[in-house]
Length: 137
Image (cartoon, rainbow, N blue to C red; front, side, top):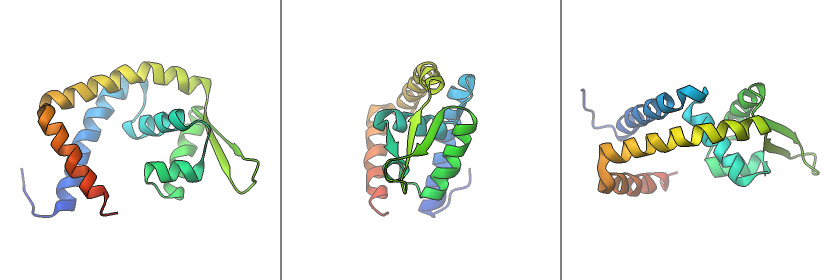
């Protein structure tokens, strides 16, 4: 493995490795971990405006909009106008709720695998470092 002193390159490489692990776990339900994360966030905040969702997920609105359009085509979210016509509201469809019921145990298995591979202290250290990196934003 080639090692670089670039923190960004190393974090992106690690992120791809974790993403691949979660994507493989979620493959039986046809979701990517990014889609799962977005659906779970909508589920937790339901209903939620696109602006609030973008803020919560630390995404710009255009990236979030592209991701939501994919989920709309998959019939997993509905996006509609809010009372304030400048805002748009996102809600899960019944199909998404059912899909998340099947996806959650797969995601939990991926979580356990990461904990096994890194160990409890390793996961805590990872989260501590990531929290510090997120502050750079």
